[in-house]
Image 1: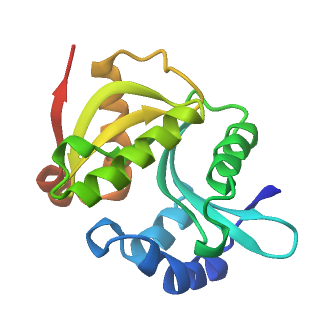
Image 2: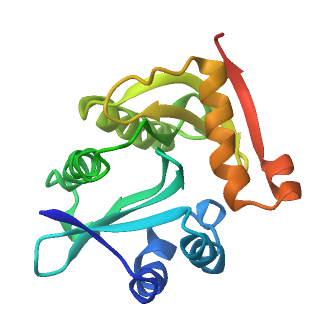
Length: 190
């Protein structure tokens, strides 16, 4: 298994073939926004490859040596085989100079049904089982409440600095008006 860098054509195909199915419409950035961020060097798209094809993928927003996992998914036929764990391990190995890798995971406290809550609790558990830690920061991003987690262990940033770092990723990819309307701090136990 390895993570490979995806070129723009592969990203566009992946977007149309998988991402529109793997993520809710309100969670998915327009393809043109992703491609623009790639052109600007503030985005990285990686695929989990077994040498024969892709098994999953992760897209990252980059700010210097800090990274935000924007999307992470495993192809349906490869789910429940440890592929998500493979992506997280390989991601830590791939980005050797990272000061910080963070991700968003839906906060089950806000689930609207017991089924949704169960799925969200499984996602949170998956990340914690795979060496991630809770930063203590809670946000609402485009209406979705998230727990901000640190991949690979705890970050040296306090909650206030983590919130600032989190905002920097979205300021890099969103127009100011869209950022102001959609990126909110829910709470931080500072």
